Image 1 (cartoon, rainbow, N blue to C red):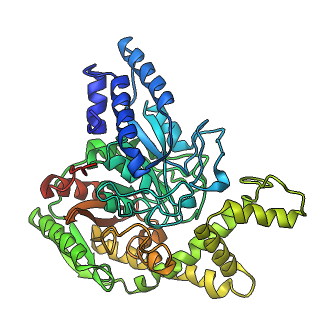
Image 2 (image 1 turned 60 degrees about the horizontal axis):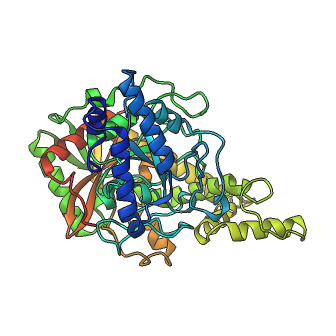
Length: 484
C-alpha cells in the first residue's frame, strides 16, 4: 500500500477499498523500518497524522465531501513553517522553533485533506547540494547508502523514493529540488517565480528561491502543483494570474515541440555517462515527434559566479535576525556585553557553511565592494535572462542534464566548497531567470540515477509536464525502487 501513487490513494480511500488510517499506518511502518538507515526526516508526526486519517475516514462514512489529496501523506521540507510542529531549517539556531502559523502551501495542503507525515532533512538553511551540512546529520541516498542524495531538499527526495511518503515539498534556490530529484530518481519541479507563494518559507535568498513539488510520477507532480499554486496576497511577489488545471490538461503528445539543446550544458565538467543517458532521452523525444536544434548561451559562463554572489548577499541580510537576542539559539550564560553574546550565539548556532556564506555575502555588500561584486552580478543576471528570453522565443523548451555527474560519496567533496558549488552549474540559470524547470529521471549508470532537465517560458509548466509525461510513458525509468 505504501507504494501507491497519490491519485490511487485518493481513489481507494474515496471508494472505501481501504481506510486512510490503514494507509497512514503502512507509511508509519515503512518509516520505522528504513529511516534509521536514510535519515530522511528531522521530525515525524505519526500521531497527528493518524488523528487526521481517522477524521477523514469518519467524514467519508458520513458521506461528506473530501479534498483532492484526501488521506495522502506528504513530507514537508523543514524550512517551511508548520503550525505547532517544529521547523528547524536543519540548524542548531532554530532547533526548538515551533511556528505559530502555517505557510500558505501548508494551509492549501490541509484544505485538500493532505496529511503531513513529517519534516524532512535538508542542508542547513538550504545551503548545500548534498544534505551533508544538516545539524541533524546527513541524509543517505536510498539507491546507495554510501552516496549523497543531492541537496538541499535531499530528505524530501529520499523519503519519496523509499516510500516513506507519497508526495513531498521542497524549496529550490539554485537547484535544490531538481538536484535531489535527479540523484534519487523522482520528478522535481521548480515553478515559475511567483507561481507558488513563499509566505511561511524561512528565507535564504528571496529573489531566487521557490517552493515546489516532488513526486514519484508526473501525474502526482501535476496534482500537487495544482493544489499549492495560485495567488497569495500575503506574498508581495506572488503572481496574480489564473492557475492552470495541470492535471486535467496533461497529455503525452509532444509532436511538433521544438527543443533547444544548450551547448554549454554538455561542455567541460559534464561526465560522459550523464551525456549518454540525456542524449538517449533526446533521441526518444525525437522519435515521439519533437525536433531539436543546438544553441549557445554564451553568458552562462558567468551564471554560477553571479548566482553565488547574489545568493550569499541575500543570505547575509536574511540571516542577520538570528542572533539569539531577537530569534534563534542563545547561550545559557550570557553575562558578557551584548556584542560578545551576539558573536557567541551566532558562532555556536550556525554551522560552517552558513557562516562562510554570511561572511562572503557581507563582504560583497560592504562599502567599496558593492559595485565591484553585487551590482555586477545583478547586471550579469539581466544579460542571462535576456539570452534565455530570446532563446525561448525560438524554442518551446530548453533541454540538458540536471547534474553534471552521478551521485558521489558522502564526505567526498564537503571539504572543498568550490568543487561542491560547481555541482550547481546547470541548475542555477533557471533561478537567475525565474523560469520554470523540471528534473525527470532518464536512466541509471550502474545503480545510480541520472536526471534530465527541461526549462521553459514563464508560466509554461504545462509544457514541462507534457515532456515529462511522454518520457515517463516511453523510457521505462520512472517507477523503479531501490532495495533497502
